[in-house]
Length: 156
Image (cartoon, rainbow, N blue to C red; front, side, top):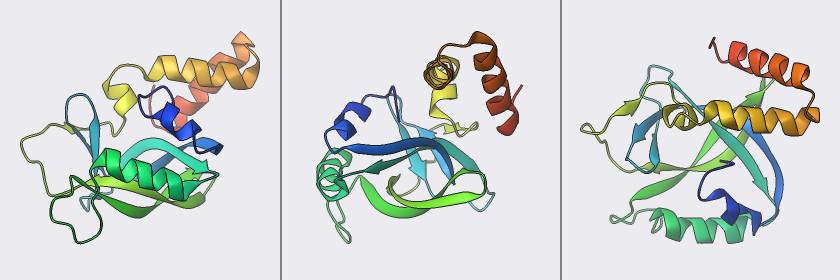
């Protein structure tokens, strides 16, 4: 995600677009980073971003090594690369790759909001930057857009 440690790596592979997205699943707090786990059946939502890359094959090869994905069927993988559908707004879905944690982690805390940014208390700063970039620093429009985004997410 933008403003996160691995995002600069994605720029090397040509970012075609990057938009806010949601997927069914759950986030677990590993401390310095979250882990995505598949939907637990309760229809929990994870907030993230959908990133389209110009060279996804090279990107996935690099990310597989970073994320500890050693191939399908490999018993020693830390994560598995999985295709999911992400909701990108206005009823639109995009299919994309994500890394999901291998096995369950019952001792680790679940991030109940489904938002790593909110969990780390950086969501408001990110939203201000994002909206400001898209509104040319029109303060009234920035406040209205942030309020609208929060309303869509069921937040106040």
